[in-house]
Amino acid sequence: MKLGRNDPCWCGSGKKYKTCHRAFDEKIEEYRLRGAKVPDHKLIKTPFQIEKIKESAKINVAVLDEVAEKIRIGMSTEEIDRIVYDTTTKMGGIPAPLHYQGYPKSVCTSLNDQVCHGIPAEDIILKDGDIVNVDCSTNLNGYFSDSSRMFMLGDVEEKTRRLVEVTKESMEKGLEATKPWGFLGDMGQAVHDHAYANGYTIVREIGGHGVGLEFHEDPWVGYHSKAGTEMLLVPGVMFTIEPMVNMGKVEIYMDDKNGWTTYTQDGLPSAQWEIQVLVTEDGAEVISW
Ligand code: MF3
Ligand code: CO
Image (cartoon, rainbow, N blue to C red; front, side, top):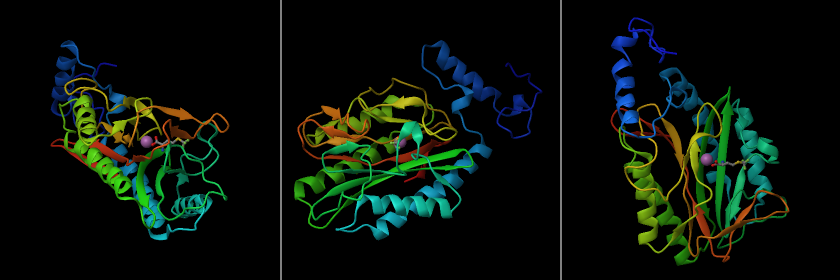
């Protein structure tokens, strides 16, 4: 699929390849020849695709805003699921988790020592002192968005509050380290170092992912990688930063009764924030939060 100099550019600009992305592609090729992992064109979003993904994200953000407004002590996580389903579908989207690999609900609601993939249920009631991650993902006309936030209910213990705050800061450090012509590992190490400097651990087995044209795309995004390693970041690459930060030990286990919900082994709380970011010409843009 080699484009000629005068062929229309793959990015959809309508310009000739030689005056559009040819130098860009050559720069990537130089990195590849020097041994770097580089993104192929499938992972580099075109301006058209970016617009479509942003429309999807507009719904995702609105859904999380709606949850933020309505969440309260005494509410069941099933009620959160209904808010997510109703708000998403009213705006023309489909909750991406629903029936994804057999997942039964529209959203993940992970409480306290649940690391991720908590399944909403009528008999799970939010109580004073709980922390909960609400993880929303939207499919709008085949374009995907994905982000999650933590909510603290009532009187949350100081040390748990701190976990939630440091987790958010870690995600933000990762965002700051996300730059064109840098590496995914720059982001991973920034997230890692902040969490570990605060005495926490980050789950190894589950991470972020490319996103946009599919719910989960390459690359896999971990937080135990070193700066200067992993995939080269170039404008148009899109992925999630979503560290799961444990107050205690790093080990986790999955509930094999439902095949989804993951817990900390030591029973201590875990927090997670997730943003969807686009690598731009001069840094990174948050697409969904
Ligand atoms: N939203 C999760 C993520 O951040 C994925 C959940 S998969 C589901 O990648 F099926 F549980 F929804
Ligand atoms: Co995600």
